Length: 191
Image (cartoon, rainbow, N blue to C red):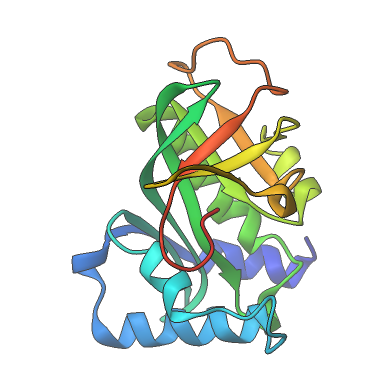
């Protein structure tokens, strides 16, 4: 982190808010950051389903001089590891404003997200292609096969294998990271 970023961080304000506590202007600012950060590539862009997945939990918002510059949310999901259901804090909608990426603001938010999950859930989980960013905060890549639980039974999600990360908490039972892991079905990206 450079000297300017350190000074900016001293002025930054990190807040935890429920979805209902977000003002309409804050929602618009957060969505603008997410759209810009994820880009326009069809496979990677941030969709309405992605936003819906981020709702209903706790939003972590970092403001600098009254401007939102980083967002992440944690929603409760039930993941199963080898058929064992676990109350999971699932991380969604993580992004920093493009002009604030790569200088440590995202790490500040994810460190708080990590602490929150460790206090509140049996397990933490997220899907990402940026494993190194999360590994240094205690997350680890799940090596077992992934699937989604649908009304018609399990459906493998092999494209997600190697992209799911988990975080152990003080209430996480002993888990074999090569075991199958499943999530419930939802519209859009299931993981």
